[in-house]
Length: 98
Image (tube, rainbow, N blue to C red; front, side, top):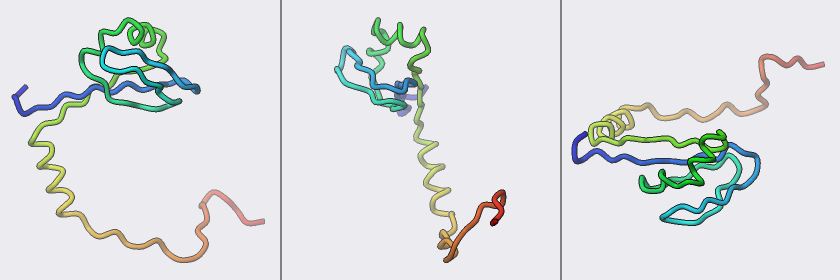
């Protein structure tokens, strides 16, 4: 990896209830189905490793490179303007009026 590459880590709570995390860098409550960014040092937390083994949380790694940021800028610059939604009632194709 180049020195301009940024690596970020995210923890996602897969439970339907809040989760209290006590990590090296912070103590916080992660809401149901919520995701937050953590430091690399926090990944060694015993609590986090137990939760990962039980599949109650997952850790996602995101790598950002300067080239990817430039590609996103090029796509945004070349994108078409969004057209407004049509006025009136919009129905789903699967439903029939009775």
